[in-house]
Image (tube, rainbow, N blue to C red; front, top):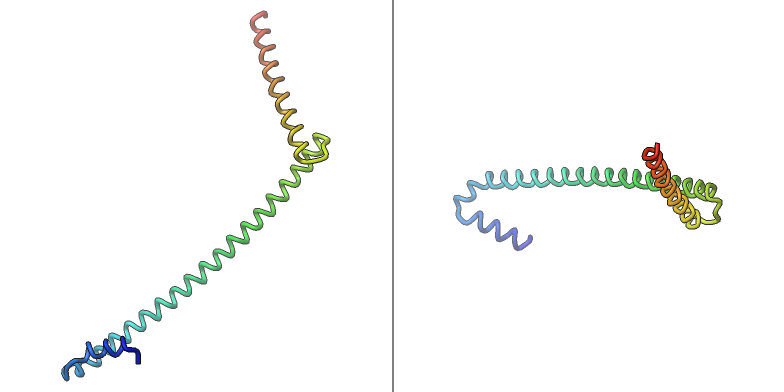
Length: 120
């Protein structure tokens, strides 16, 4: 038997009267053992639930990543077609240049409108 167990027993059963309380002591040990077993069952259940939730989240994350990659590929193809480019980087650069020109045209249109209001 383990030395710690023997020390504990020696501590609890020091006199003859302690033998009379042995049933109470054994009941207490049994209660503690049952409590520990229940805690172990609960911990295992929580662990299994956590594993299931983590796997579900990982699956969802993989699906979202796949959908994002698919959407990104679709955008890249559209950008290549719209800009008549060979690569995505070239297409993005051309698209940005077009957006810059559009911004300048909007500013110019605003000036023309303002000029029309002033002279009109």
